[in-house]
Length: 253
Length: 270
Figure 1 (tube, rainbow over the protein chains, first blue to last red):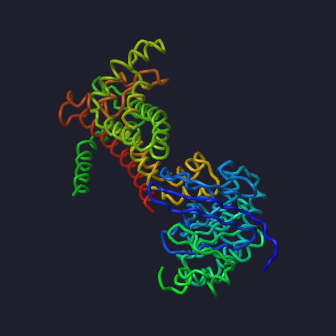
Figure 2 (figure 1 turned 90 degrees about the vertical axis):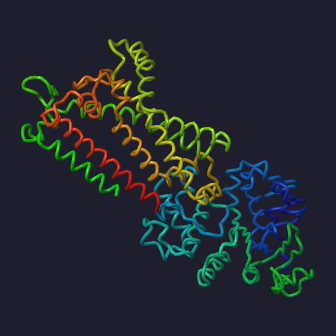
Figure 3 (figure 1 turned 180 degrees about the vertical axis):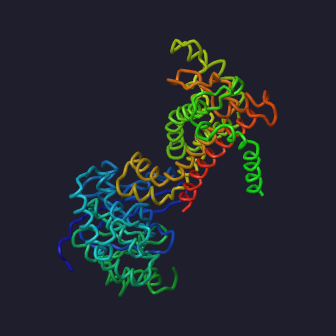
């Protein structure tokens, strides 16, 4: 695959500290448009810290300090309005967390917040979001029941639909299937594969096999450092670094 | 145990108070407009007292609910940690002031102030009572509402913020929404405290058992009536029974309010 790829996000010399703890060291990497970029690595390797820097959720943490630059579409994200950045770069958390509202209102929440009031428009947005997250057929008859009644896998897809409704450009998944059963996991992975046609997807996962299944390119982080970054197939068949090989074959982790 | 005690109290109230209804029908007792318990013949209409209680309580609610909820939101969501601790301690301190002291302060400072502002013949009015009682309801409302807000799962906030919500949108549309049952319970308990309050209202409302035409007139509440007149009655007499019947009415009102608060507290726990 040597097609020309558009760089969506460019991370340049990124170092992150939380107080005295270094979470990431001199990270340099580019994420392309319309790819599934997976990040693997053991706990505390800086995966989630990286995600939370990309939409500046880390800014809420008082101990957070960073150096280096994160550039999206040619612009430093620190120069962007933080709310609109978070709208463009959205995140799906490990545990699905529906708001205490109905299914419909959960998804309409974002658009409403961003100022869309028109009822028919909202109905369209909700349906589109649910269809894209492959949830529509399962919930179309009970849109006004509480979202808490859905199963875990459905809730996770609801969270995806909720994010799609605000029309992001980048969707980050932070271990999205760690709390799900294999069938729900397969559904969510399938959803990701379809979504990459229109969005840029960053997937952080503890599950090495999942990275191998869905990732286009995979980065291996260890103790805050980028050990290796390659096409997923390449990385999983012939890793150049011994540590990568040990990790993906399960010698530690 | 406590249920038994409550039941016994209620039974005692009934025993002492029900005899009044042999002489005065319930509807007259509740809705007649005159309370002249020691004239001849005595008149036992508690409507002015009920209206007095409702007026003072509603006024206190209008003042204390918005301020209380806003303070709770501020303390729980916005205030930095140190400010938060100071404010919480302050509110607990406010709750610890004896009602007589609040009533006293209301009488000597608030009364003359209101008299001056509205150019009245007396400053001891329903409005003074409302303001005084608002002070007493506030600590309850703030501390319980603050607990409810703090108990909203962090993930709700994260989810909202990650979708590009501002701090204000998150606080208002998500946190306040999720904490709603707890906030209703807080308001109900605050109001419950206000209705049952005796000493402070007695000192600042002017104690005239008349149906008021505005909040700038003196009123007398159910509680104040019992406290003020119980010492002058003949035990077992009609007046004595009437006061106990007022107690029954109060008991039922507070019971209902606490019941509503309870329902919402349970909802909040779910």
